[in-house]
Image (cartoon, rainbow, N blue to C red; front, side, top):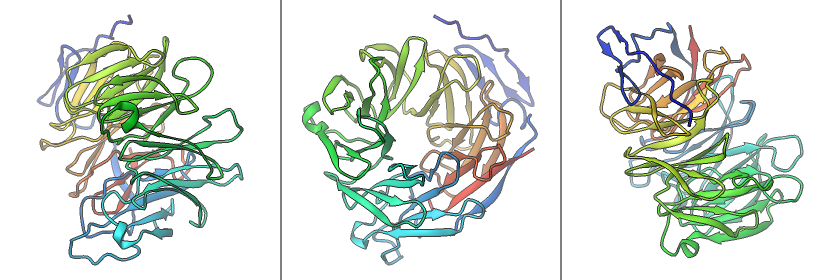
Length: 419
């Protein structure tokens, strides 16, 4: 097993770094912003709502050229619900202005009316489409250019997680895998025809909910992709035709995967533990007693040729684990208040070719951290809650990722790092 690299304990500016199970960095990183940079607002979208509970992240195309935000209102509030209270909104990448929007019926409008969108060229026409699951109990695909609906597929109930666009079957082109909160999974071809459906409530044998996006990867090394779905009660690997390859009992609300020297590893964060599984067999490879972890990304952020697990936790904590051993590499806090940190993402905000760790705290604070040490690179504060992870994307083509933050009041803030 690869040994974790030794890091040196440091005391700077009254902040303590302790070498133990891993490096622990005090609030604000090692020293006060040793990288000398800051976050500045590029723009703030004109999509306010009369609540602070917008939960779902903004979607971005691979080149940062198509930005689409799910914006929702709360029933029972002061604002009267209209046809646009809950809307899918395409935002201009240069100033955040609304380019198009498609609204939901008022009776279907609430916090989870629209999932994080998936954005890609689904039908091979050279233009990007937008796929989203909705409280109209449907997977809906839109033309990314003008927002016209292309097709929709019924779901068993409303979706919570971003659909996944990938080539799953042996057929040419891409498919879309969508889940719903009731444990349903559907695979649709690029023209909207349904390949198959699976009810995980029946497969698992008890009531389950799905909160995370399906992962598509060749988990078992047979040259064909499989679909991994985490539920509140189990982790399930489906073959390309929807049959179950293996199933493990675990609270798998947050699931991520990464390729290692031994194949594809799976990381599951639950209420009380973080566990790693072998993608081929489903065998557990390590577990840690880390409570209330949230994971989105497992990747080699620090350039040591081994992926890391990036966790957001309660008590304002970011924890980074070695993905092969589960050992802690470093941890830090990112807010002056005891709050929840959403699952961190990786993005190169400085433009130096190396990613930073991007963490959003429930208090509205967004922090970029050095991936090697946990030191603070830049921070931004806005006194509005953040309920989900940020979206890194190079929206202006300058070689630096901007950070798109979905705030609870419906607005999206685009942040740019300035040295």
